[in-house]
Image 1 (tube, rainbow, N blue to C red):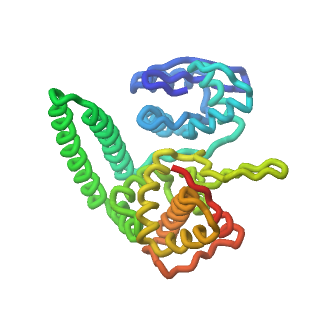
Image 2 (cartoon, rainbow, N blue to C red):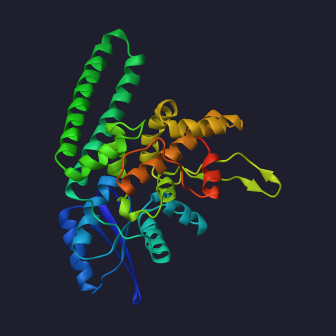
Image 3 (spheres, one colour):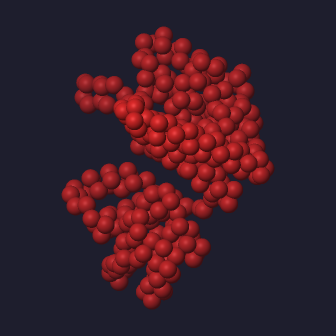
Length: 326
């Protein structure tokens, strides 16, 4: 289990279980390494993916030669439900994560290249400033005249910070040939701009780690979740069992693509003719957008509006019925 200030560690070894807590700091990592050495343990490590809290520990353990997996907290949450787990403590969560890793053997994590890691940091900083801007704007809307000026000044400061971060993002892309090409490929897709491109690249796995476009759609949580039992068939929705930040990053680009991307417009027309709702169409656009993103990165070719979709009839039918959601 990973908390902001501590690591709750549980080892499942043939000789038994061993538990210990360490500081989530460089000194704590060294203490963890000494503990593992004393136990003569080289375990497969499973950590919840908690952004800046999990990455330092994951990087340290990977550098020590251990196999590290970062798992979606939602996967652990639903794993706990299958075990009828009702407790919520750090020690209990550590046990659940260890059991999940032992049972499911999740994919090994690879640390990002330095250029991508820098991109991730700037993208996350931009998101945090945007979140602060939303809060400041909400306060301004309800602030009395005596304090409104403070919030206006805060908004101006935040806008300058956003502009500065976006300058850093552009510089990070221009300084790395691999990122520069990837951004050029993604921005060739109508609806995908620079900010969407760098956000997608900072979040998604390396393209070589993905087996298909469907896997990227599942990673983003834009695959359909069916609701059917017996003769009852409910409305399908986005599964939302993927990366929430990536899904959020795709929403407004999908709206833009519905107006400017011929492939997505064609899909929207077919769905509208079948009587599908607006949100169903938006969800389908988000899913097709992940397929286009995968396609240009996988084949290293810019978007071609005339290219025919070569998915199987079954996959095409699934795509056309992809549900909507915010």
